Length: 265
Image 1: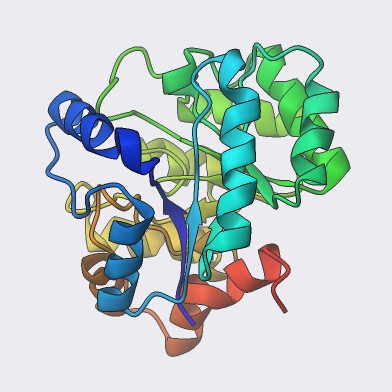
Image 2: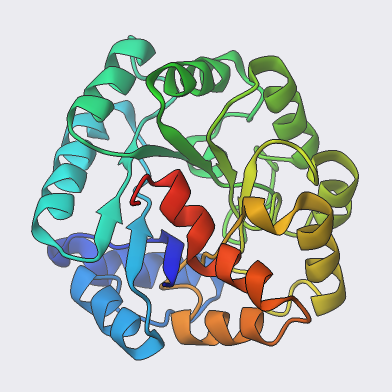
């Protein structure tokens, strides 16, 4: 089984404009049109069984709509699992985290760069603590954001501080712990009791360092992810398949770890 733990889609009515805007900002050519239909077509081509969609709440006022759409998508689309979203400036964080859980959503996405809050800010610490209390997964953008490179709201040292202060049980650090900060990941995060996904690594990291981090962190805490539409699912699978890892390690990364974390067994 292949589970892509890091994908994005947008409602059909705004997908074209959103993808064009993000593509211009980042300088990346997308692999899909940003719709759920486009993602499912990519999944079929890449032989991906399940994709996890990670919506971002960029303003507190979006909370209700984003989470309602996420819950509806989970009900209607086979093979797709959507997380919920929350903004650190939302009022009554604990109540809102409980609301996300009540909708049947398995996790929450936060994005320090888009939300313009540093990862070790008390507002994020409250979200991590509340999510842990409710047994929810938290997926967080980690490291530099290609479209919003400065300041680095999710710098590795800030992530390490947040982990130390909250001891979250189901934290997933996107982009192998910190995009383009992988030396710091090796030093400060590899081996911690958190998950890392493999989203949008492309040729930004060498195979040698990628394998080194996987081995130091432990393949049992690595989740296959792509950041589709910004990376190709088929191409990302081929990258992992080509690494000098054991078949057992690859099986864990491609799906076994995600199945356990998502409680699909």
